[in-house]
Length: 107
Image (cartoon, rainbow, N blue to C red; front, side, top):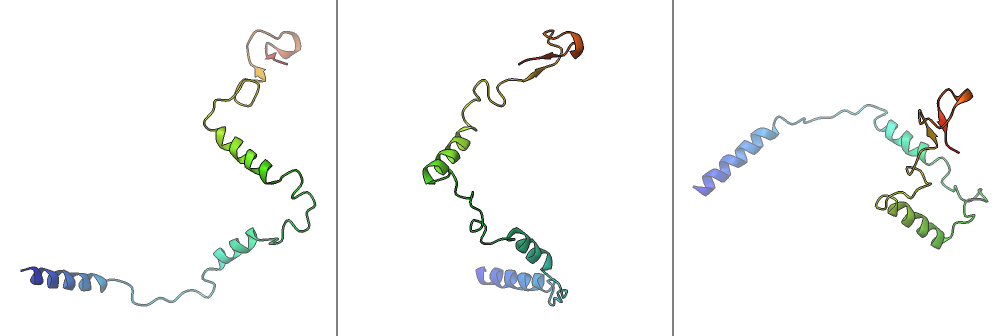
């Protein structure tokens, strides 16, 4: 019984494969878009060679500290005085009058 089921499944798979495309004629410029994108991203493969500021103030320890601080910024809450901790402009807060037209500007 198992061998009959195997033969049936094999014939069913072979029948399914006949619906697959058996030929393919690619266009003459097939892949040109991908190759152009790769070339555009590698405009200067020797990028640090001509730039004197490429290594300025960035040794391995500083680079690691920068990456660590960046990753910690997603887990730790923002401290006051930094981005996301407060607003520089308070609209309709009642603090400003005169030429601001009711818009209070926090120093």
